Image 1 (cartoon, rainbow, N blue to C red):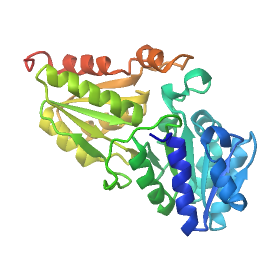
Image 2 (cartoon, rainbow, N blue to C red; image 1 turned 90 degrees about the vertical axis):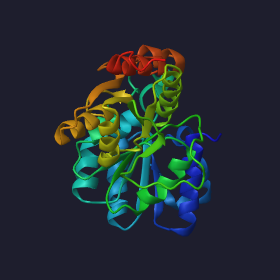
Image 3 (cartoon, rainbow, N blue to C red; image 1 turned 180 degrees about the vertical axis):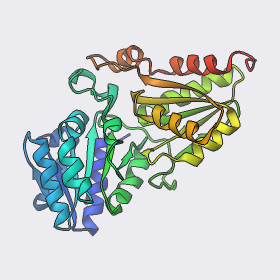
Amino acid sequence: MMDMRDVYCQTLMEMAESDKRIVILEADLMNANGTKHFQAAYPERTFNVGVSEADMVGTASGLAAAGKIPFAASFGCFASRRVYDQFFLSANYARLNVNLVGSDPGVTALYNGGTHMTFEDAGIMRNIPGLRVLEPSDETSLHRLLPQIAAWPTSTYMRLHRKGGWKFYDDSETFEIGQGKIVREGSDMTLVSMGMVMLQETLKAADELAEKGIKAEVIDALTLKPLDRELVLNSARKTGAVVTCENHNIHNGLGSAVAEVLAEEGVPARLRRIGCQDKFGEVGTFEYLMEAFELSSPHIVDAAMGLIGTEHAA
């Protein structure tokens, strides 16, 4: 599998070949974000602003105002916390098409540690009026969603799993901003996942639940804002029990978005939220961090079993 950052760069290069408006901006992380090939192919459309992320967003906003379609990328901690005011006002308030990419979400920051481990970026961005917030879950979804992001009339924020790749969807699969996918049918329990890391763990959990006689429906949210309300509601009405699974803080992320939808529509479904339990990040291996923040499949299974009890067990 290709690294997701390589899929990101390759897709942008394909888009740039037919659309001269596509430009990229980096904050001195071109090696990390895998965009050196774009720079080599399109040097006049590549802007490395140095370690100055707020300036990067301001510059991207200026380029968008001049008719360009900018993709500005940095580690998620810098692409959310550090640039929030500039992104809020210069890009979103101005109704410009500025596409901000925050890499290494949640535990995927690994050895960069607590300062770089963004469990709150999607929640921060979710507060911006009209902003689309996405997290592709594999190579195909990333490749298919990037052109839609470019064509979107206003700004987007995309979480990007940088290192490592996974191909779950077939190349013929279609995607649309604001629509999720049912990736496994079920009737006893709904598992709503977001992002590559958690979709893999959620599917493992569904397999483990199946061994216990529990048929779990698995939803890949793909877009946090706007959440695919009808997809979530229809599944929750069917199963009556929902577990949200996110590589993010449980506050103001996927779990909060699903809870809001269920409460607003009066759906009597029980809910548990798998995610960072309001903690700061730390340094560690992927395996250690998945356990330390209770994101792995056994924790999803435990949450599911806690909701529905053992009456379904074989």
